[in-house]
Image (cartoon, rainbow, N blue to C red; front, side):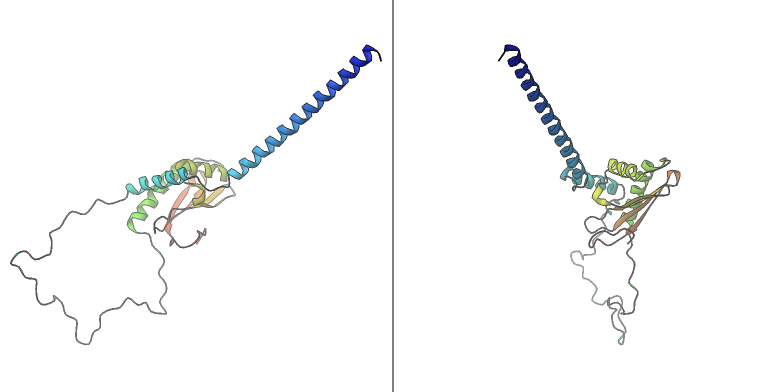
Amino acid sequence: MTLNRVLTGAGTAALAVVALAACGSEQAGGRQQNTANSVGAQAATTSPSPDAQVAFMEMLERVSALCVPDAPAATESDDPGPGEHPPTRPSELLPVDEKPPTDVPSPTATPEQPKLNEVEACEGREHGKRIAQALTGLSEPAAVQVRQKLNKLGYIDSRIHGLKAERGVVRFYLDLRVMGGQLVLKGTAAGKKTAIGAFAQPEEGAFKPGK
């Protein structure tokens, strides 16, 4: 065997090794990219982190602080002072044949619709102001834009429901019920016609948009 043939064979083998190494690198890179894409897709559907939950509750507390009334001033006590005696007769007596009222509802009575208390109604207005300010001006709003705006304001994805775009209008609900509260917001983002409304829904079970 001549020296030229040996060198030629060695060169060919080296090229084959380089080609295989390059092929392996490309396959590994492709697998890494697909894995990254898969992880990114899964991250978008995971539950909010504890930090996001804490930030959400802190945001609710800041808004609520704008609506909490001042503590009532102390009033004079009705307890009798030294040497005083409480009245021995009630100020008003029931007639003999009249029974005290009961709180048992009639079986045919229509159940009352839940209502927001004064503080929750105020919170609904305050949330509506900040959301409308962020969403007003989107000429052709998309659902992803509205979600990003809401996230930036502190509203986490697990509290955003029914988000959908239709004919240039994005509709959504925000579940703000915490610690027995009933506050829920219904929003429509449509440029200058953006509107946010508040209503009450008992904090029982999973949230159902439109209920």
